[in-house]
Image (cartoon, rainbow, N blue to C red; front, side, top):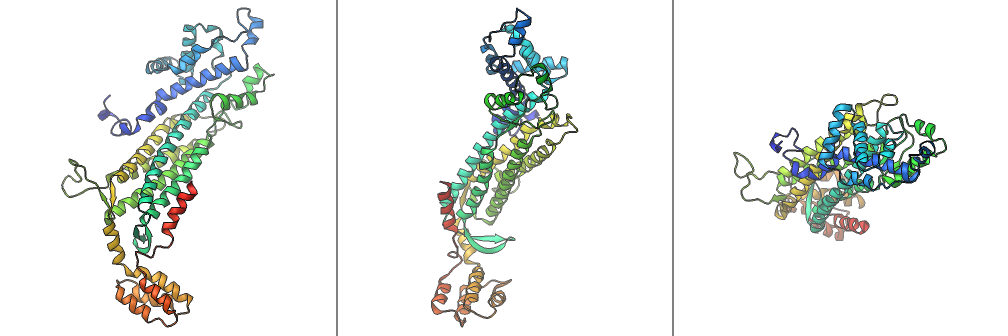
Length: 465
């Protein structure tokens, strides 16, 4: 099927932006990870627990020695699209996806001369033991990809913040002219926010369980009462899969870790939408210019336009990602009694959530790479809004006991423009403010009334180191 025939933009229009997720979250990826878990569990049963030795006491043909299991590793490392298609072919007969994986592995074992241990495949497992661990491995890798992508985003933000640390900019609270800041400080706000989610995602362990049909190791214990199955499952999940063991479950993993990862990604996506909208607005105000690429069209009817499409694209795709992630994060923590299958179909959209999220980040990065600061526009806005100095002036007047400072500045500035001369006349008429303070007030301008904006940018970089 060609990309233009794809139902979703993930595999069509935006396929180039999601290709690294294909092998991870596709059905091929899911089957491959199921195969890996089944093989690792089999190796654990044979090599670590040596449970197959019991059979040798009953059946002399069963070897008590640990067989050469290199062929099992080959099943995982050489797993291919044709292998996945064979699993799907088996599934058409079994009508059960995990059982099809079991039969596929047994076929491979027969071919490799490992028929003697074939029935240890899927030992004491319920399908969810294989599925939740497979999805856990997928989530862990997906989480790492997200962290790497967000770090690139933060690096781009930090580069802008450092370059524009000292460039004055008029703030806009409620969309109206407000206390000045610097461009760099506004960029660093977003870097700091995103770093909170990077830190959380980096530290968050993905949990998995392998404890049987209702989470109590029933079959395990009945077959081998002498084995410490709680310890065994912990060791397997931690040492063989690199995941965090979870003991207290029904048949299914309660998906607490998955939910936490997705909610962190929701917060990251919300932060990026906030950034996209701010950049859209700043471009609209003329604070940033977009570099024009020869041959591109902004509008089909207005030749002059250069639209902020990358930030709009990022905003739109992050909105879809949030919707998916919020649903997954809530839905996957629910199951009727000890198990229902409504989570199974929902989990298959996990890759879509990561896909839309990735598209959102990549388009924000693309938008950032195409903008240049228009310092002249920022300077003009500051110069034309002298009323911004009403805040510091009324504050100083309070300190020195001037009567009704707020009200007097409100009468002077609210709802209309004033110039430098009017402000200077106002300052000259103050009775209690000392002359040296009046001089400071007279020298103040919107472009120098920046508080600690520059220092805050420096503080961010110092504390990050």
